Length: 265
Image (cartoon, rainbow, N blue to C red; front, side):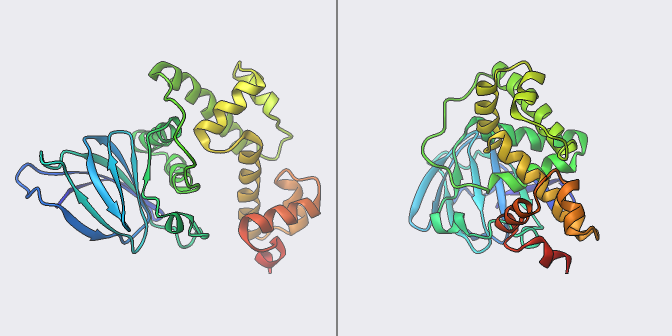
C-alpha cells in the first residue's frame, strides 16, 4: 500500500503526497476510487488500467480518479517508484463538479504532461507554500474541466514557462479582482508586454480557456455568490460586469443550469 503524507486540508479540498516504502510488497493492486482526485506524478512511473484501457503514467502526467472508478496499478518489474502529489476535491458534489460526467463517459483517467498541467501543478505549489486556498481551488476546478483532445503541444522551456506563467498569473488575478470593470484582452496583453495574439494563445494554453471566456466564468461565479448573498438579479447583473440583463440571464442559465431568478427565490 502507498504511504500517505497529509500536506494541507480545507473543508473543500485536501492535498497529500504519497509514495511507496521500500519494505512494501511490489505486487499489482486493484482499488475503487472514492472521490474526485487528481494525482500529479512528481517522479517515477507506473502502469494503469481502467475499464479495459491502459496507460503508462510517468513524470508530469496526472492520474484522474472519480467516485466508483475501479482501477489496477502495476509496475514493469522494478517495483513501484512513483511519488505523487494528490488533490482531492471534497466539495465536488456541492459544486456540481463534472456534472455532465464527461470523464466517466470518455473513460479518460490520465492527462498527459503539458504546459497546462505544469501551470496547474504550479497552483498547487503556491497553495502549499503560501497557504493560498484560491490557488488550490483553481487547480481543482480546472483539472477535470475538459477531456483532452489530441496530443498536447510541445512543452515550453523552464525559463519560458516561468515567464509566461507570471504574466498569465497577473492577468488571471486582475480579472478575478476587477471582474466588474470593462477589461479587454488587449488591455491585459499590453499590461504584460505581449501582443494580443500571443497573449491570447498562451493564456488559453495554460488556463484552458481564452481570456474572454475566463472573464465570463469569473463574472458568473461572482454573480452566483452575490445572489446567494441576497442581492437582486438586476443589481447583480450590473455589479458583476454585465450591461444587458437578458444576456446575463442566458449566460447564467448556461453555466449553472438554471436562471438566476430561481437561485434568488
